[in-house]
Image (cartoon, rainbow, N blue to C red; front, side):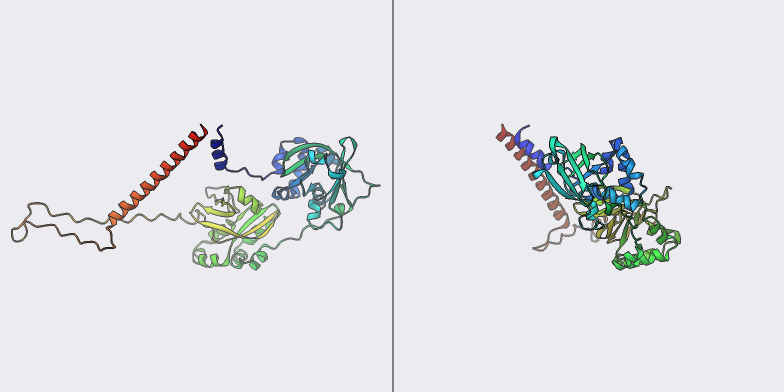
Length: 409
């Protein structure tokens, strides 16, 4: 391909996203299905996906057996598995070329804030014959054995590296019983962060607050309109039936956890808590333009995500600047019809005589002022300008293409 044409293609082609999906990657490797399952169950998968640079020390189904046989609670299992996620990039080549033969890396366990002192760090060592081992910094070498590098599963430099290790990592801190995370009171959170009106409506509308709260554990993304937007919408809300009020409130939540990064990359139609599988879909569309995320309803309403109140899997709560109006409750706003063209008075027919038998003459046109121009001439001039601009652009583009070909040729 000619250099100039190649340069043009590179300039105009959209850049590929660096986002990764650990669940999707491991789904192509059945030997890691158990490990993949528990990354999802402990909500570590979302944490891995939102990181720009990460290394996952994956365990195959056989290696997961001894870990699961200890019957840890889910919070403790999360700590243990987070010890297998390094917050740095280590591909196979880097592991076999360690400067000085060793390295220390922090993990998601350390980043969680639950790991005391040196717990949550992993020592990596390069031995003779290219053997690489991994050992938690707070483990006792006399009672614990290091795990070894087996193979590289998937590498996307320098975004994500998934490598298989021989056995599970463990440490006293990671194995310590972990308390379940404290439950978040959704309405309190919203009321304190600029969405008090919406929170109050949830509490005063039958089943609304309970439906929201019950959905948290399974994954929930809430879009609460700010107080100013709710105030402007109040008259419409009062006119809804009791069922309509409940549906509108439930329409502002998705029964899936979406981080802000996921909202910026995963566009499309989503179901809501109001969706019931009938002809009334209660869906809306997530769209983004760069860093701006918007939600568009089939009724033509568009709301913009303006802030983040909480983004911690399995719960995300965002503020929006408009109330979402579902088509099931509100008709789509009609585009105003264009104003009818002014009627033109018919000129008197030739030969028609006036009152005194003389031929009538058409009325003389009113002269335009020095700074005025008839409306039809203005439109004609504007259309002509548009045609000239379009022609100029086309001619310029054609000339540029011809010149580039001539230069390369």
